[in-house]
Amino acid sequence: MIVLNYSYGETGLPTTAHQIEVSAYSGWGDALNASVDGQATLSGDCTRRSASYPAKPLKPLNSWSLGEAFFDTTATGAGDIGHCATYWYLTFTNGTYTPAVTDYNINEFRCDNATAGRAVVGWVVPWYASALTYSKAATPNLVRHVQLAQGSGLPGATFAAPLTRTTSVWTIGVNRAFACPDDDVRPAGLNYDEYPLATSRNGLSAGGDRRSFAGCSLDNVPRSTGPKGASACMIPELENSSQGGTNTQFYRAERVLDGDPFRVLTTT
Picture 1: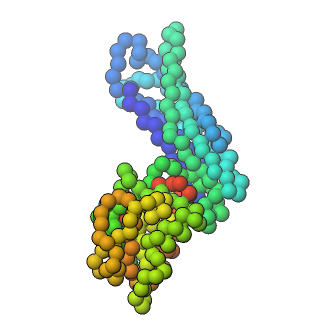
Picture 2 (picture 1 turned 90 degrees about the vertical axis):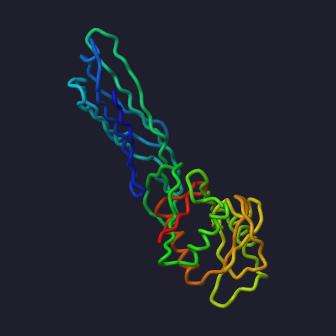
Picture 3 (picture 1 turned 90 degrees about the horizontal axis):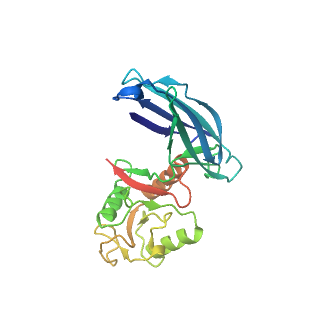
């Protein structure tokens, strides 16, 4: 048989769905006389709204049977964060034979009412590192710095080595103070940019050394490589302000909470 097992949700809705499809593509003897139906269940901070998987024969070969269930979060109070795992139990019935049962589950979804700036509840896949994307057309100097920083070995560009969000005021302050000390000379119209982002757990609060690059107006800062540490670069104030807005909108839209992974990408 072929079994398609998948879920979907939305960052602005309190409901998620779990679908399953089954198709027999070969078999022999009495096996092909079986029918299949399903029951949906859950564990965690959610309730089942509805579920349907009516019994259907496996024959004819390459035909499909479908089940779909909907689940509502119970993490709806202000500041609530909940998780929900959902399951389908499939029962194969065939005359006088003992029914056969198998189950399929989906990795947990997370639902929260704790995302700053969002007044609605929504679902995300918490282990998926969403992409914060900067545009070269809008912020060319910021993009250049991100590309240089990632090219020097600092993490954030890939699923294998994402950044991790922090909302700790202490961690953010240390990241900024170490990467962008007050005693540096700041040319008129320019402002500090640090990478990894100060709002990540991957900055200098986690160890490593400060680095910079040619063209960043920080000639006294060493050029170095490796996955630990942080880079600093002077970029135009307008681009720095634009970055702040982009970051806030991204964290809000993707419901990136403290401890969540995310990536940083650039486009032309």
